[in-house]
Length: 197
Image (tube, rainbow, N blue to C red; front, top):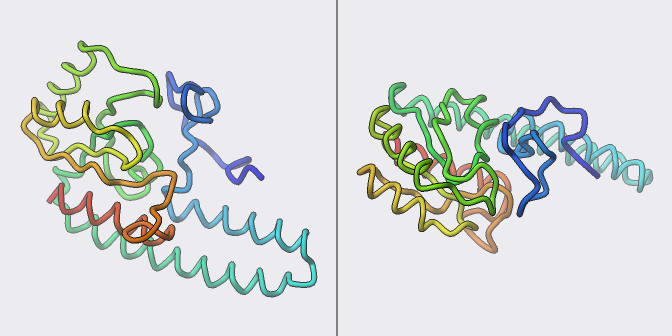
């Protein structure tokens, strides 16, 4: 089941299928916006109810409870982001996974190291990104835990900024800190907020 089908997605120039199952030109990371993730909950509820009608009421109750948990998460994220000075609400990431999240919570994605996982940036592109980080006074750069952070660490060193290498964008951890969706989002927000303050 494709959960994002029919949802408005962000066009991302240069995105390819290399190393990631992204549709050409579409940013698939919809779930990183808890508000949009509610549509996933509804679609899962409906699919389960169709497949197992005898338990449809149970699926409806669980979906209702999870939607409430997502609303609470959304409110918590807003509170945490509000603690970041507006001028510091700028991020550079390893790959462009956090645009939906940034759009929802008022952060600006100012760049990313790779347009699509598996596509290496040129030395010139890295130098331009380093200059942008310095010129825009971006306080930190971020990498997902499942990618090699070496390029981002070099970029951060050259730009003189902090690097955070343990965000999650598509897979959960076996235990804390990202063993559930809500915990993953809380972990990511805590890491971002601490680095950007």
